[in-house]
Length: 208
Image 1 (cartoon, one colour):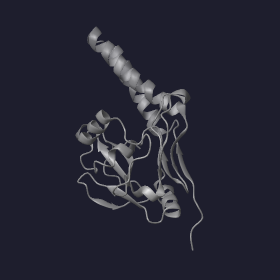
Image 2: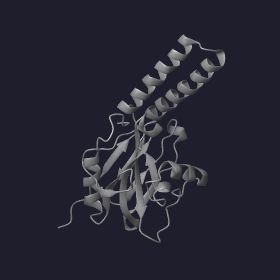
Image 3: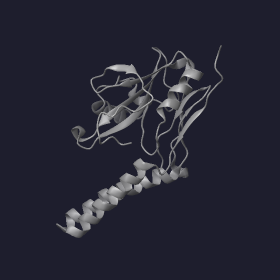
Image 4: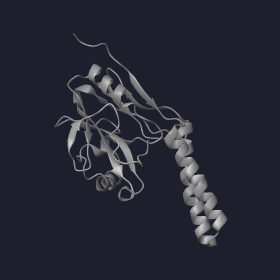
């Protein structure tokens, strides 16, 4: 017996990830001003850390749907700097989807933790939806950072930044709407295995 359609949404907001990043940016900016090693270093530090914290805050305050799973397919959208600067959503219809992948990008050889991603693998021969191909230079850059991820998945991937994924609800929604679509975890060595409802704690410094 077929299951009733299930809708799962994750929204941008002021979650723990955003708040911690903003607080760290404020602390580093204040430290740069207080130590005042040199004018150049101080200005550069304030610009870097201050801008980073401000961007993260605007992403959280911008709100909106970051990820949606429903009867039509899976839709995701990159972060925007407020309601007027949101990139358009990209929807992958279920007939074209083979897998939903969850994976990490290592930051600073693991020193600064990992950034989680969600990506979609299409069936062979299926073309990405409108807006799903990504910018070529960004795809090449991401491919260098995500060598453990299949290249065709990278343009249809998004960082889980400014929102959080409830893995159990995601897995349940995919199973209800598209039973033939796998939800998998991809390890740093490229190994693929069924996604667990709880995020694997491979590092104490994950961005979650």
